[in-house]
Length: 248
Picture: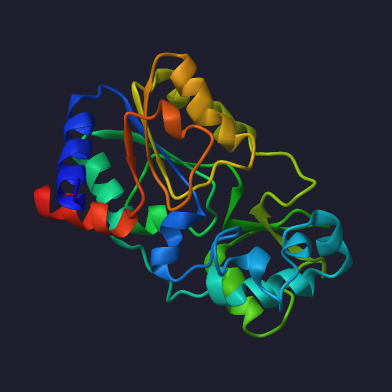
């Protein structure tokens, strides 16, 4: 089946769903030039970055410059823009089809595309805070700081400023988890986009939805543990969503 027919099939499923929810991973942002973690050419395959140190809270406390220097180009670069997948998801929400986006991503591209109901399981760089006095800083303020110095420091107390991203060794945000649980339990169709479903608890979301009677779809370059339970499967995100754009 070609990707146009696949897009038509997917739109029909979405149109018939009463509570349509999407789970997204790093694979959707590669179309915007942001590297994923475990895919070909991803952060874990690079020789110049130790991905295990990059988002480790203990290493951040020891050397926060490692995080800021190595994430500057892909996380703090304002040139990163939403792609067709982000844009179509925002359009589907505006039209009333899509009820929520649950994401593992920390790149803010869903919000930049216009999505409102976005629940970030791994936190967000939209807000930063001082690890000493807990003063909050918005993204734009920190963006200016990191282009003046390798590590942003609190202007009030001199403490290290950290993003509200969940690093390894930290707990996940309760509100995002609660909302993800709510929409997962309510979903009658959950579409998984650009994730290999290997990182928990996000990886458990499709199984929970399926156990509750929800139908599953997946578009991902590699196979996942839940593929056999899906009523819709494809592997070319860009082509499918470009065709959906033409059909909407």
